[in-house]
Image (cartoon, rainbow over all chains, first blue to last red; front, top):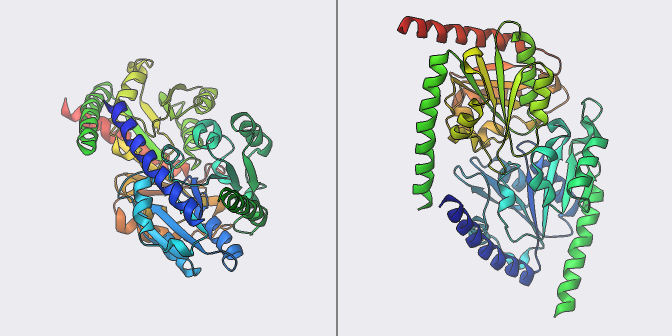
Length: 224
Length: 224
């Protein structure tokens, strides 16, 4: 019964996510579902993206947290719309929560929505949010063995950001070992090493992102 | 229906946890439920405890992970029994999994069982495992705002370990702010600052632990 109910929940979620994907496509909005452990640097990563892109593209952020509104406040300080979802205990965002958040955004104005999922390497990956890309952040202080222990999120993400690369020298993180594990799990993942603190490498990722947005728009134009 | 089922699952878990607690008490085994984000340093913390206590007390470790057996292997290399539970996707350990693991341990010989829960700041706290104490580890690179975002695990733990304190100087972690948040959430929590890498502060925590074990044994003797 438990498994059946879980299947029902996921099926209902997928249906809403498909509706969201259609809305995002119609409105020409590129959507990023950003997932990571607590403290891997999701919010800092978003702030770096905003700093580079905000004069060029209209960005909104949807912040998912169990409690508090500190992340949404940080984003708003950077002059970008931010909707805070408090899940009230739930360990992930779901498509229905995103649908509710969209009512508070002017979709006709937006180019990108960045969704910061609840800090968790397990549960968020089960729930499609209608996004274009899933991005998982891992960070040096977490250790090089996390993909072995939480494989699904690393297998099902199109982008892997390795953050806090500035801490590599003062840790026992084995970068070769990490890359080797990733090659086995998800050889086609787009891999970027960054330091959100030192603003290193973020530009390379943003160039990749801009290309994806351009490709998505081109596909859409071609399809009309 | 979803809420009702969740209540049923938790009620069933609590019943098994009560049975486990009785077994642990009868056998004089002190049980620690160790919870944290992925990469906060749970396994390193366990290894430091083992190094200090293994000549004095009989220790076993139950390792909870979605996948892999790397943690159990690390513990066994330290000459201590370790049972690896792979949850196969589940984001937490539950009492039934612990009951299964106990079949593989000689309970008459043991003084302490350390349970390393799945790396997750959300889900594990919902499931009683029959433990004596709940210990949550937070670490400097995760940032000082984690208790605001994941309050329940910080409210319901008797011990808070702040790990990787050696990284304090090269981070923007505000220790005063962190302590202030914790004072609001859980003023009676037993708080220890440690560096598992530099083996700093672990001895203070172990002294506290030894006192708890002694008190538990005294209570038991007094009750006979």
